[in-house]
Length: 269
Image 1: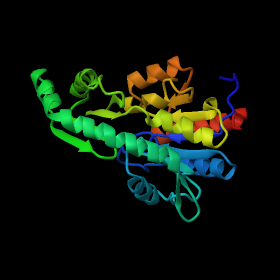
Image 2: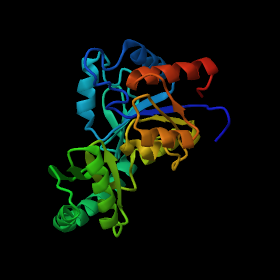
Image 3: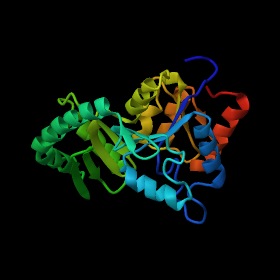
């Protein structure tokens, strides 16, 4: 990475990163809305990387006074897999990327479907009893274990069970353990999105708070990274190891804190 950041693209996790779900205040404060709007207008690509469906994020942001694509977000990665750019009148999919990922996703989901009964029995044999179990056709396997500790234990078991599948990797998000598409991931999406706009990976700044954000925070894709005061300890350790930043503010307050500091330092491309 270059010593001085020259950020041209910013990727934000959604829940507990951009959106602060603590009661009693705005989920996205006006100053964060303001700086994201300004950066988009100045030509910095600012977008979202989430497991959520895009229309869920659109509706949540509209409730916070942030109209979708006007001008934020410039782009989004939905289901941690599929990339879209937000145009004036329509979404502009990254057709080549999305088509390839959909084909791989179909294969991965088929492979999981053939194994999921045995996997569930293996979890139960290890003393792990899923609360809910979903196999999503556009995402992969999602297992609700009820608490983060059991979710991490389940993730490790699933990692062993899915090791024979070249398209699979595992991660955890809160109380959920996942088997997802290794050729996608939030970090992979952000790197590809940047490349399509002529940007190097080290010109990307990613923000996240949870273990399912690690692919864009731990340096494996060459991205710069940040987390907030509410980030998981595992995430903070990964960001430190990547030479990144940890804000004093929580969620979107911390995002504004760091984006404003970057502006004062002249760290945008």
